[in-house]
Image (cartoon, rainbow, N blue to C red; front, side):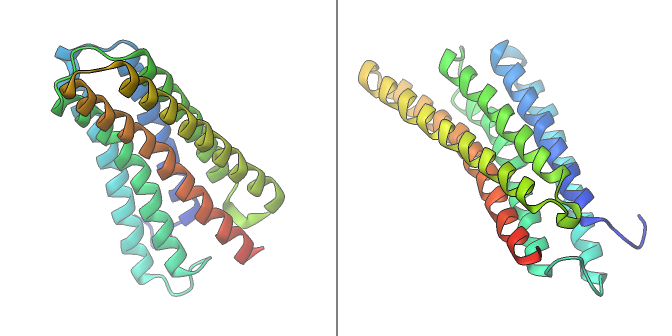
Length: 205
């Protein structure tokens, strides 16, 4: 590793991994196969582990950095929030496995596609972050992430209402309420990262 790290490239690289995870999650749910879940969990976790390694490398360099391009605390907080995006996507398949889900609901498939959308928007935001040259464009990207998160919240509210109004089986209620909550956390993780980016933009523009 070189003595100088580009922190903005790091955030972009993590956002690429998050997009990769989101797409893999959507593909897994769209073509859900209970028997292949352990293997798919293993691959999903390998992507999350790659993000962990990048975070560790970045923090190691930050410790030695004399004058980082933005506040040190902001870099650490952003790295944690980006890492959390990868963690929350990784956890979705763990929920499917722990609850021994045999079939995926159409609602979960729809939500997973929306997670792909918000991760792509976070990636576009990350691509344009370096240098804060177009703050208006960056803020617009943050708004787009927030808008998709709002759509995700509405989806979550709708599917939970549907679940509790039509299902009388306590085990099914427990399993799917946990899974839907885990899916909803993916939207929150992306929004939290975007909101901190907005604050960093304001401080540095």
